[in-house]
Structure formats: structure tokens, C-alpha cells
Length: 500
Image (cartoon, helix red, strand yellow):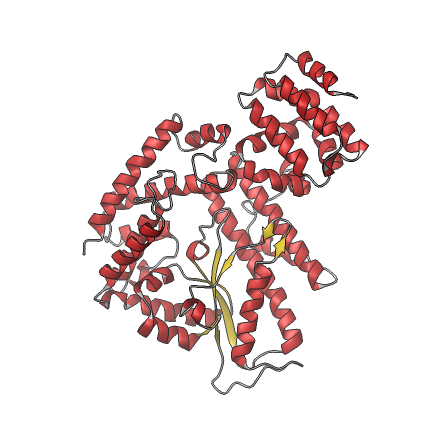
């Protein structure tokens, strides 16, 4: 076993004096002092020392040697325990190479490996991840996580979710799955987890407060979740809708509640459960503000209230948001009733005299609030994703009364159906669809891999080289130029397609 930094440097020289030999020796000296949680045990330090030659060789052979070292050091510093992780890496050179790829490409994933080495084990073992699993298999995998108590059950759901979020992101940046498939995988995972969480939440509620006779409730997804277009860091936009008889009695449980109070409590419990904190933060950031009257209205919405609000009081931008509504949990008959209410309101949007004016006003407000000329901010820059979404939502509302099948919560599907219906010319459909695909890939890859902050500053060197290759471009400069050209073209399309 190497005993000091001088010996570490000597080991590095034995494989050819890598550019980072001095840095390697300094890092190794820090690790061997046992000052980090992961290096406190002699066993962990022993296994870590066995990695020195492999690590030195990796540094020597990579143009990202410094990134590899600093990334690995970050992992050592953040890991809560090291013996198992370092032993598995020492015994598996392929696993070490994969880990070094990840820390160089995706600094955002390093804390996940540090805190949850079992998730990295799952990656190396090629265990099925959410992108590979049918929805029924995901649901069954969650259903068997039951524990002796609700707290233990929920902790297992959190661990499962974190592991699969990591697996999706790691497989995407490593090129083990197409980056375009990540949004579907994240959305499918969130859908399955939401179902399992609300089963747990409802069971708790029923145990305390019983049920409201004759009542139904459902959960409606909006935004990126409604479109099944989640990124690695997306919020879950949700709305809880219920229906109870006007003369409904209070709930039947030992702590009886009136129907309105019952369903408001249910909504609060859903938010609390999905947003519960663990060492990685909130499981999901949950947003319920798209309900009628926003934060000023009840947190749970009666179906009749939703109907009246959408028909009489709602703003055009709320109808635009409702084009992305998708019922994600609830009885089939009641889910259909909610969909009919929402679509009925959307079909009547074309009759709004202020439809275009309202849309343009909201478009201006959005861009004023997030003003940027950074072509890498593909969501907010003029000519970016928001402009494509505004085009699709405006055209759906304008034409849905004549062609009801136009309403689709996923923007890519909406563009496709607008083209099929002749609302969009084939050239416009193809141009916007291609731009959307480009922007989604950049955004998803950045959300998975890059530390929080503004692009391109937060890109690692390895990521800045790999991203152009993902998109068929020769280099970073070529991709940057392409983003600028495409955004300019989308800006022109927005003006042309929203004229009347």
C-alpha cells in the first residue's frame, strides 16, 4: 500500500508522468489524512490507494485530466461512506472508467453517486431503469416497496425515485440511451411515483377521516408533466379536482370533515408528500398555482367550479395552459368528465375576440420577465422553446372548435396534428418540430449534466465537446451558430403564424 504523497507521485511516474502527477500527489495526500467521512476508515483508505495507478493512467490519457481529478476529489469529499464504493472501483476497472466519464461530463450527477453509491452499482450492473421498463413493471416495482409503517414505505419510494432519476440521467449522458428518450423516462417515472404516493396519502386520510359518500377526485397534470416532457429538474404542475353531491354528508371517519375541507386537506397532503425533503432536497418541486384564481383560490377545485371558471372568468393564458392538461390519476368516468369540461372550454376559445391580443400580451410579459440574448438559454431566448409553445397553443385554441382533435398536451404532438389538419404548412411543421427537438436536447442534457447556472459557463470541457456530437455538429462553435440561426428562424415563424 502506498504510504505517502511521494510514493503516490512515484506510482504516477511509473505509468508515464501524467500532466496531473503533482495534482494527483496532492489529492492523494489529502485523501490519506482521513479527514473526510469517506476516508475515515483504514479500510476505505486502503481501497482508495489501490485506485491510484488506474487514476493516474486515466489522467495521463485524457485531455480532461484535471477535470477527472477534481471530479473524483469532489466525489471523495462528498461521499458519506467510502469503503464499499472504493472497493468496487478497485476491483472493476470498467466501473472506474465509467465513473470518471460521469464526473467529467456531468458534475451535477457527482453528489448522487457520493450519497447513493448503490445507484451507481445499479448502473454498472445494467439493472433495468425507468427508460427500459414498461409502465406496468414500474408500478409493480413501486408496489412491492411496502414497509411496516408509512414512514418506511415512503422512504423506500424516495430511494427508488432517486435511483431511477440517476440512472436515466447517467445513461443519457453516457450515450447508453438517446437523450431524446429522457423526457419520456422522467415523465413515466414521475407518473408511477405520483400514483404510488397518492395511494399512500389517501390511505392515511381514509384511516383518519374516512370517505365522503358519493364523491370522486382526480389529479390533473399540466405544463411539462401534462405533456410528458419532463427534464431532470422539472417541477410537477398539478391540480386536484373533485366532485361531491351538494348535500354530501361529512366524511365517515373518526375525525369527520366537511367535503370541501376534506379535499383541501387531501391536496395539501399530496403536495407535502411529493415535495418531502430528503438529503437531496425535495423529492419533486410541486406547483398547484394553475388552479382557478391561483393562490387566492381553494387548493382543491370542485369540478363545477372549474367549469364555471373556465367559461366565465379565466384568462386566455389559462386556456393556453389547459391545452397541456392530462388527468394522471382518478376513476375513469370522473377523469373523462374532467377532460370534457376542459376541452369544452378550449373549443370555445376561438370565439374570444381578444384571443390573439391576449396571447401577444402574455408573450411580451414572459419575454420581458426573462429577457435574454443568450442563445444557450433555449427556453427563454426569443425564438426559443417558449415561442414554439406559444405558436402551438395559440393555433390549437384558434382552430380547435373546427377541428377538436387538435388539442394535444405534448408540443411535438400538437405540431404534428396541426400539420396533419393543414393549419400548419408542412414546411412550418417540419421547421418548428426540428427546432423543438434541438432545443429539448440542449435543455435536457444541460439539466442532467451541468451545475446550476447560466450556459455555457457551467459546461465542463468534456460536455462542451460531447454535446455538439450528440446533435451532429462538428464542434461547440458550430452548434452555437446553429442555435442562433434556428432561433432567428423561429422568431420569424412566430410573427408570420400569429398574424391573425
